[in-house]
Each structure stands twice: as structure tokens, then as C-alpha cells.
Length: 580
Image (tube, rainbow, N blue to C red; front, side, top):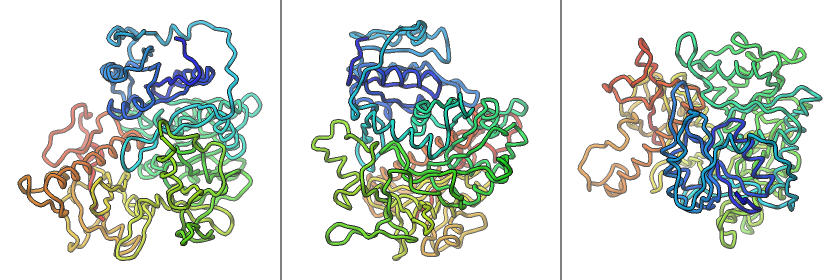
């Protein structure tokens, strides 16, 4: 193919060994890797890949999720049609060994079969590269514009991965320790990158592609024990997942140790959002003891931005519920006050402040792709405190040196003078048994902050609109926010998802939020898209079954493929919108 240093190799692949193999091959040549999960839509993928103009595209013909097959050849055709820079297309026949690759043909483009490319052993020596040679491009969505294409270097990522794996996560070379590392992730999340990172320390990696709550062989219903059974069969000693996964295991009343032999597990990792204290208790109660002690629970908090963690765990320190054990080695993290006139903050202890890193870390971005003068890069992290990395999270450094994350500081709700982090609101809403997950956000035009919650079907009878002057009824997430956080944060409105974007009134009339009709409709559509994206994400992370779809409005028919006898209340999440 003639791939050389600096060429971009993009992949549209699931979390299987094929993706790790393709990444290692790319890195060994000094080419630059970038990957998207095949469950992403074509526009989202193009928003990322078009920015870096790949020479090679490696794609999968399809995948299976929750027992349902998904054909991705049409998406691959669209990607190739809109990526004129691609000179070589590689097809991984994962769903159908007889898939016709000729449908991907095009002028100036050579087709290849993945299996043929890896069939023979080829003698080669990896390229010797500078420390700061680009390794991959990952993406972080901003509040405006295209996703930020973040470039990380070989040396910085290697140091960060070895540090986190061997020192903070305490996983060693499998041939010496028997350790095996698993983190449930799609290829679209930065936690996927920790898998090839674990290989640096000689640790065996256990990859899982599919629904963590795949349908039970006995009942055909959602069974969150699926991923735990995989961990047992793979002999994983370190198991990691997003915080929402553990929350949903708790709400499902799961008892994994009764469904699988988890005796080899020695540590549980969590990230993605703050882990609720109830989830700490569930993990300690349900996971096997290690050497007579409760299992080591090591939540981390970091980001795609620097492909690492700022705060994490350490096996020699005590674990406090709701708290991460320490700031990571080489991460000069502090909680800062609002900037003074000179743009400096004051370091805080046992107070909530902005998470800053006051000295550089090796894995911080080399740059953003095609970012002239580093303007977007500097605006993203150094706008509040000149020369100091501001990550955009609220953090409290505890007196004993631990850390608690309170959510995004750029998503803080300030209502009537009381500031509330999103994590506090999430904890209040998600404590309700009907709520699977929630997400906060703001549309592109000014309007109140919105909190979106996906609610179990049983709560649909309470899905009617309720205004600020109406007292929350039993089970209403609005009441949970007011009781747990502050009455001033009692959401002013609540809508069922099917009502979003369906307000009464002719086009052109003033929208309810005071904007012109067209702008108001667009804002409501933005909200609707966020709700749908939220539900799709939770269905993946929480392990909903194949029959689970975006919860229908009352009166809509049962979704196609729903198991016979399945109750309406079990059809899947039913999203509501709380206007804070």
C-alpha cells in the first residue's frame, strides 16, 4: 500500500482483536491511527475522518449486537464516496464471510481483504520514531463546530499507559502474574485505547464486542450477567466499565457472583462519570473478597484530551466511598478558585474548585489537526488561566489527598445564586429506581439548562407535562432534585420525550422559550437529538436487549422484535426532559 510516516489510517471497526492488530501495524510504520465505532452514523464518522484525510480506510462489513445483525456495507460505501483521499480500502468480513467487497470499488482506489493481509508472517522492523511523533488522532466533541481532532505522540502515550497500567492499576506481565485486563468499551471511547496500552506491560487483554446485557439463552430477555460471565470465562483479574454500567447492575438487583465464577477478579475500575456511593456498596457486596478483604475499587477520572487520568487509584492506599484515592503520578492537579485580576487562581483544599494541571504531562496533545496557530487548542484548555491547563471539571481535593469529581464546570447550573454541578443533579435523579441514566446539556441557542433522563417504562404513566407551579408527584425526578440538591434547583418543567418538538402553535409564532418560532423549533429538535443519542448510548452501556428501542409515545405499537409476552413497561427506556 505504500503507507509511510505521517499517512493517516482510519478504521471503522468493532472492539475485536482485529482493531488492535490494525492499530499496532499502523503505529509500527509511523502512520497515524484513528478509529470510529461501527455503530456510529456516517455523518458523525465523516465529521471526524474528513478532517484528517486518510490514505487507508479499514472497515467492517457489519456486526451483531444483542442478537441483531447490522449491515454496515452501505455506510462504508458512503464513507468512501465522501473521503476522496482514500487510496486503499480494506474490508474485514466479520458478519458475513461471503460479503461482496466489490461494492466498495471506486476510481483510484484499491480493495484489500483483511484476512488475506494478515495470513502470512512477514519479517519487519518497526520504524524508529521521535518521542513526539504523532501516534493517533482522537476526537472530543466541543460545544460548537466539528469534533476536536486531538493529536497525541508516541512517547507521551507510552509513558502514560505504562504508568497507569503497571503502577496505578497494578496489572503486570501475564507470564509472571497471570493478570488479564478487561475494560468494557467500544472503539469510539478513549478507554478502548487502554487495551493496546496494557500490552506495553505484557498484560493479556480480554476484548468484548457486543451487548454487555445480551439476551439470556434461557429467557431471551436482557441479562447484565452476560459481561460478567465473559469476564469469568476469560479469566479477567482487572474488570473496568463506565459508572453507568454499575449503577444499572445495582438497579437490576444483579448478583454476578451467583451467575459466574469471578474468583480471579482482584480489582474493579470505573470511569466516565462519578461513581455513586450506592454503586461502591454494591460492588463491595457483590464482588468476591480478595485475600479476605473487600475487592479493590479504583475509579479514575481523566479524559480523551490527554489519553490518561488525572486522579485514580493506588493499591497501597485506603479506599473511601465516593472518593478517588489519589492524584496520579506526574499529574500536578489542583482545585483552583475563580481567577483573580492577573488570571491566577488560588489552590483549594477541601473546597470545590476548577480542576487544573499546573505543569505539563507527557501525554498532553501535540496539537489539534489543522489548527492554525494552535488557536483552538489554546482556547480549549488555557482560556481561563493563561498557561495553566483547565480541564473543565469541578474537583475537591480532600484533606487526606483523595479527590472527588462533581461534574463538568462548564455545565454548572446557577439558579437563584446557588451553583450546582451536574454530578450532584445526576446523583439525585439517578437515585430514583425508574431512572436508568441522565445527561445534561444546553442547545445551541440560549435557553434554560436541560437535564435529560431516560426512565423505565413503568414510569410512563407519570410522563405528562408538569410545570414549575405543580408539586412533584411520587416518583417524579423533579422532586428528587429538589430534595437532594436544593429547592431552588427544582426543575421548572418536565416533558415526555415524544412531546419534545411537538409544542402547540403554528410555525412562526413565538416559541415557549421566547425565541422566534423557527429558532425555537430548532432548539427543540436539538433537544430531541440529544435525547435519542442518550437513549442509544444507555441501551449500549446498560445492556438493553435487541428489542429495546427509543420508548414509544403512549398508544404507539409494540416495537418489532419485542419478545412475545414482554410487558409494555419493559420495552425500554422512556426519556423525559427536565428543564432546569
